[in-house]
Image (tube, rainbow, N blue to C red; front, side):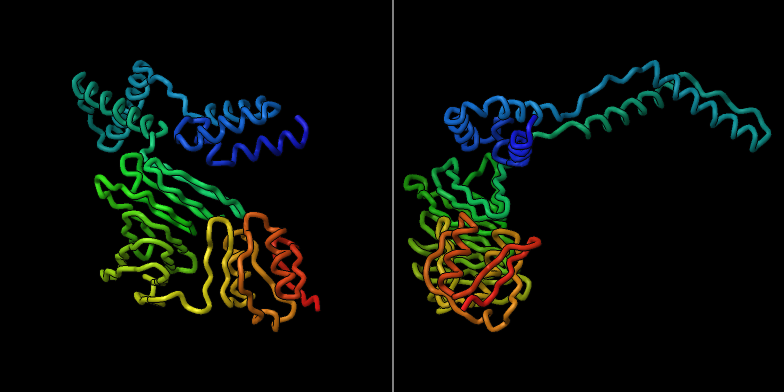
Length: 334
């Protein structure tokens, strides 16, 4: 296997959506990969090789030989009797067949329990997780659209797909259920978002949760027990660590937002911009000139391609950004 094929194989094995396809555990991922395979027939051998590897890594149960168990049990009981006799200097009462049988059954039960613990358990939870710099578009079973930013995770139960938990950053377009008026819930470490049908952005970075509402209305149930209703154009930031609302009301002047693959900056310092890139791509920033940290950005920048994103920032701020040793080094280019 050449290096390019090996690298592609490893990429497939590390891709959670591909593993879902291999295990036929998620309708969205199955549909995506079936289409991808049709469009890339030259990759089919590697794809099915990876699938075999995913499905082949499983615990293989083995039967328990009762004769072997009884033999080992007799040996253990014999050692116990010898030690007791050596200690007391008295003959030891032989264990009855009934006692031996009970002990044998207990041993078998213990072994079977340990075997059962090694079987893979079928999870009733669906998990979508992105790597650094990866953005995925999801369509939940109820029709809700979710764009998941890099280094983020969303999970929900198969029996309740309108109650999701988010770590990281996502943009939601919740499909309303007009007939049942069923609510949609987004849970974070700080709060719970109650939705009927609307569009909003949720960011759980930096030990707080920021929620910005674009359309419709939502209720926030903060972990401190307070409930807040949001209207379009409003922004709420809450930290359960500090138990305080950091911002509430209209979007503040210095706002960072993320809209379906695009950063939207409103008079944000370059230091804050690079912090958000660090969350998404896993690359911390280092400023060679500290005065550059205060430069501000306003406007939209696509973030699905790091090179394009950095190029746009360089042109806007008059800087040069170099990726080196898993860091982004910022120089003054003026």
